[in-house]
Length: 211
Image 1 (cartoon, rainbow, N blue to C red):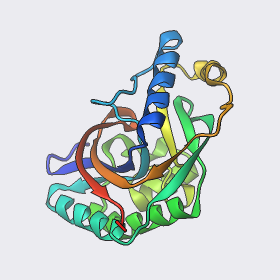
Image 2 (image 1 turned 30 degrees about the vertical axis):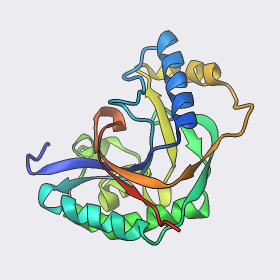
Image 3 (image 1 turned 60 degrees about the vertical axis):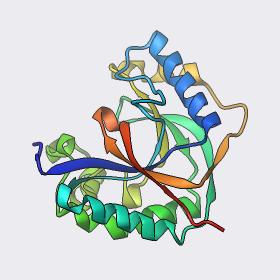
Image 4 (image 1 turned 90 degrees about the horizontal axis):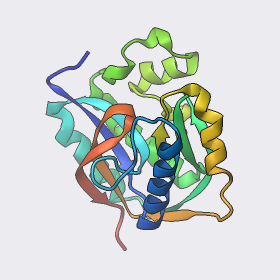
C-alpha cells in the first residue's frame, strides 16, 4: 500500500555511455520480437546497477543523501566487469555484473548507513510477502527490498518480458558476449524508483572520492 509520506528510491550506478548504449540496443532488440514492459532509454528509463533500493519516509530523504555523500567521500573509483545474461523471477532479463570486492563493500556500506532510515517500510510492490521464496522473504523482511545483502545480484535490467515462456528466446537473442565489457564507477545517483525496478528520474548525482 502506497504511503503519501514516503518515496521509493534507488541508490544506483549509471554506467558509462558505451555500456548504456549497448544496454539500450539490447532492450530495443528484445522488444522488437518479444512483448515487454519497457525499453531502456536515457530520459525516463535509465540503464543502471542497483546498489540499494528502498521505501523511505520523506522526512528521511536528506539523511539518505547525506549518508551516501559520506560513504562516497571515502570510496575510491573502481571498475565493474559485465558478465552474461540471465532471467530472474521468471520475467526480468538481467545483464549481470561480476561481484567484485569493491562493489560488494560499497553495497554493504550503503545498506549499513541507510537501511534503518526506511523506518521499517517495505517497497509497496513487495507488500504481499507470501508470494515470495524464503530467500526473497529474508530480503524483504531485513532490507525492504529484493536481491540485497547476502543475496545481492548486481545487474543491469535489460527489460521485463510479459510472458515467462519467452525467457529462453530472449536469452538466445542476446547470446553470449564475445567481447568483455567493463566500465569505471565514478559516481552514484539517487533516483526515483519506477515500475518494474526502473529508475525514471535522477534526483542527485554524487561523486566518489576525488584524488
